[in-house]
Image 1 (tube, rainbow, N blue to C red):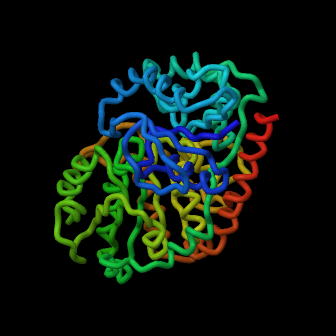
Image 2 (tube, helix red, strand yellow; image 1 turned 90 degrees about the vertical axis):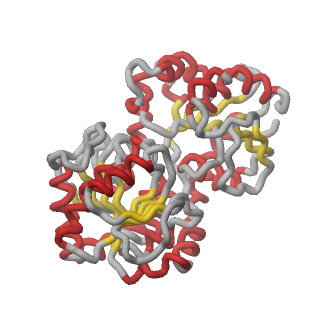
Image 3 (cartoon, rainbow, N blue to C red; image 1 turned 120 degrees about the horizontal axis):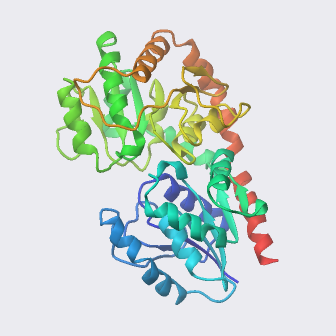
Length: 399
């Protein structure tokens, strides 16, 4: 009986980072990828099941699911355990059939999908067939049970792991060609440049902050299909913008798009704060990682994840409409799911964010308080603690 991991790709995302970290502790025989993209380096063999890339048509890749199943079966033996991450990989895993032990891992809120999205139908039909479903927080488990007819013991809550020692070590590295940033106060955001991450709100908020704090800069780490929209928005907002694959680097810009960075932690450590504007999530790794770096976090109270990380003692069903000074960070109202232009009026949520961030940047006592407290919460996600939960789950399948 062998253990395998299955995921869409090993591109620069949170689920991909989780798979890489767990591979060091759980030692799968191999990691199977549905697509051809690798930005992380796990310690085990990686096998690509197609030449698709994340940029290819998602409909075509979904239609390819039966072919993935057929290809994957050639590597497996009866009774093998397959743990999958992300929806398309989960569909492939379940369709392997009952001769294998199938554990699927949910990474995002199901409510993020529109009611007519075909994945909602597939989730409803296929997920009950899995041996176990792992969710990264209680809210996502609650949401899943309300959407799909599942057995009570089928759903397991296991938080995402942090390699705290590695995060701390990497956070101490120098910024190299970006070294000039440490001479300026700056906010940092990490995440794919996608609709889910809501970064256009952050850009509009930053324009208002910049009016009062001229030296303030904004650093965004990540790639994605909204890059051109976000850059154009910044230009319309009148902010000087550096783009990693377009411009000559110097310290005269207001906003820096630095693309995917293998070590985002060094940028977080030297920032004034980590700001997170996601419209929905599963378990936002970068929020927990920023706590491990020892940095204050200001995050939307989106579904799901931020509240359970920053305010673990509160009701996970709560969603704030005002700035909430939580135990391990500041929770903020979530924005509407719509893109905005530079000349549109500020929304109610944006005004609350602006007022809160202006206060934090002016009076740094609160930021310093969170910097001292945040590592305490990060330790709850230590990889050794989380790997132990996974090992217990795997042992139950082997028995």
